[in-house]
Length: 371
Image (cartoon, rainbow, N blue to C red; front, side):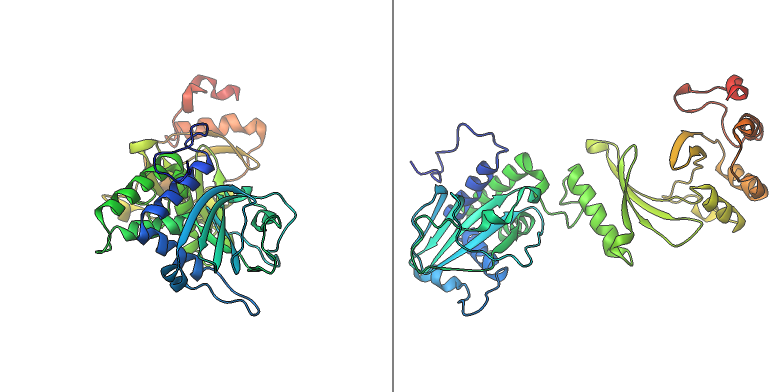
């Protein structure tokens, strides 16, 4: 029985296997005319012909019978044209590469045939890192002599397909049955392949951590003067930041905190985050009064670092006092010799700049002199 029969799923492959995704999507195309012709139009719009190649015509699909198959090994292909299609999770570059018949033994994830005019062979890779270009070359075996193989593949993205399916649900002509099929497919994506969802808004990311981080990265790249200024910080939690040219605040950070329904997205401006930045910041006579009674949370972030590694962080009870103290003592912000560290930290404790106890009870006031 045909694998695209709705009632004939794979029994030996996990739901998260890419073949299950291919089958689910092709079943949807088989049962929803709206989804099918939207897919064909997407292929047409993303394909570039070269030389004397005829452009793909959606009219051919309306005028001729079409057939959908999955997991076919070296099938007979005798249409006038053959188009190779790749569906993956992100854009990839194939500059300089040309699709051509290959000696390889091919097994196509999907095949869509339009009468005697066009065959589409589909390669589905939910992770673009698993793609190699030879997979887009059709096998010479059982390939009709004289068939025209389009030199350029059609490169499609799952996120665009999913956006199109969400839009289809709002089309007045779509049937209730098709809407149910589309909803079921989108639920399947959410459950088994959530990283394929679009991330054009935080709402569409559906609290999925990978999607949220992608959205954060893309958002910062959209507002930065240069995409290369957006970098990733791998600390206690993954976050992204824009590298700025200002000495007082070199990073504007955007990142996740918390888990599940308790997670949040935080924007942070890390003023004075290093010795050099701190000196510039406090010399500028900063004032934080205007941030009171707003959604901004202002807090000190005193920490001890060695080279590029933060070793320990301290808590402070009074942000205003902390700020004023360093404005009055900006000349004391400098590198400390190892033997001077105990005295320096004890002075800050006595001045109520930092608390005596470190995080996790690592160090108490009685042991400061022993550092």
